[in-house]
Image 1 (cartoon, rainbow over the protein chains, first blue to last red):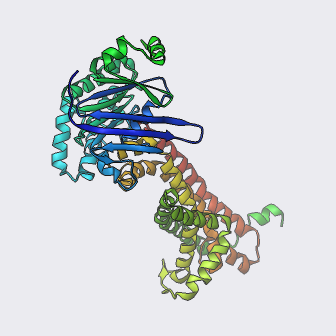
Image 2: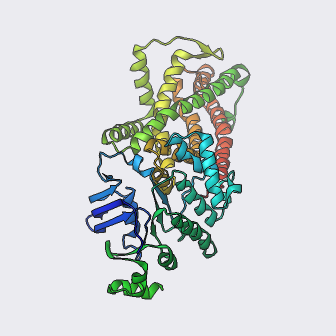
Length: 248
Length: 235
């Protein structure tokens, strides 16, 4: 198994309750190292998206710690905005800003959050747009793009902040089947370049091929945490076996 | 005279027409100024209403409830005899007949009242913006204020503009209370005509026709605006 860099994210006994009845995360712990591609799979309602969203505090844990770069970002006294800059996130429904051109979508955070010069931000954005083959759409509005193009733009928008880790929340689930490939290709390329990634997905092929670790979640618990080979060929957990028999 | 004849007995017009033409100018001016004056306080109230801070939420909620639960006429008199009973305003004549010393208290009362209603439409307009927009902005590191300013509000404006236009239509009718202060709006002109001519019905018919002639097309324009704003509303 490949060796990875320093520990980047450390999830310590995180529990998330939405109310007295619903426990979305039940005492989850997890360590993510630099350069890892951690894929989270599981049935719907298993807590995988909640897990991902706790990593950048879009969901605030009820109890437990989320340590990022040595800081417990779940602590209320921490300025979460500073840490979110370093964690890119890609959503199922793209969430591009519809009232801005693609270029303005891309340079908003670099200029307003990081205080980058507009010229420099544009150059950075243009370079990244070229890597996903969408440089010619810089002046278009999101509504003029296909789903696959929107999602590639959403990835670039996160990359413009030069994050240390990228979080993907079912990035291909809202796409027409013929557009899934182009988005996975961008993600594959990103992984190849050594980006640390946490990916919630139903794409088992991607999990197996690109993932360096695969997590199986069910009922708010992380039940399995294995390398992809073991995960898919020699599953032992009965619920994972059941799950894989349904999706593969 | 039969009822129909009394209704449409506009024989007073040659002499009193200027009450009505001035009234139209005055009513339109006070409506537009009041709604515009209401926008900023309303935005502030809406943001307070959406704030996590209980105190701010409470103040804003109380303001909105008080102004929506008491008659506008009562608010008008309280504003006029309260704050403006202490402050002495300069008396200028706008358009040669609108006295600022009573026009300004009228505008203030209407704007205070209107801001309570507009605040609720702004709040609804903000809440109608998809939550994913806020999440995406926050995930990029934008602060709550930056998210509101660059991402949410520009999109909420689309939802808010038609309701503002609607508020303007309502305001044209609501302004009829300022006649009580002596502001020479349509209603004041009507009552003065009634008093001078002893014709109690037809001047009111004329007033109704004028209000209708303003608001019916305006309402239709708002509907058209709403339809246009709804188009191209895809992410």
